[in-house]
Image 1: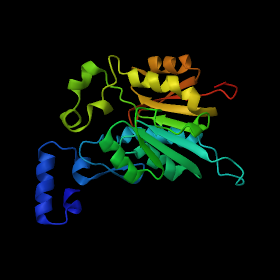
Image 2: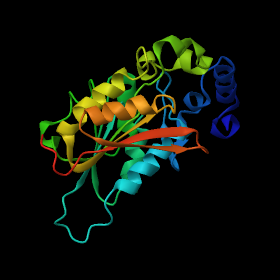
Image 3: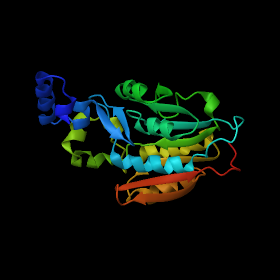
Length: 242
């Protein structure tokens, strides 16, 4: 892959040196493959994981089918903690008609996501930068939140510890701090029958589902043994009041 990406022998030598020094391959190449797309990934930005494709698959299955006419409202998709914007980009590619918004608190991630997401990308803390007109209208709210417990960060591979931002990895004492905040805020932004999807670990899934339920969402947990992925999906009841 490095040979095919390098334009000159000197560039190849520099790329090999960066990889040998521990830089993730995707950051050396400048892209990661995700859901059949090439997602631009800059140094210092969280690298999209293949297991997160399972979250995208679940979200696509929840999108409405092709519109029968132009009178149907445009689907609104929000990608929180977007990193390079892989989820937002993949859902935009899969949706028949959608308005996509993505948010991250890390400025490097935001710069990267603006190259990947065919929509609106904001820098800020979770829902804070989203335009108010989206309240009560979001169809799919996807969030690949940090979910590694703080005490386990030092157990991550060196590539992640040294070359990805801590804010994209550290989920607090039990790994669920950010997830709880996202779940708590979701009912205000989801439209009736809208869905929140968050990746987590199999061990954390029961607590995550409880957080969803405590926020008024109807939760279910789905897993993929092949991808080693667990996703909690919460549906806002159609009768829920904002």
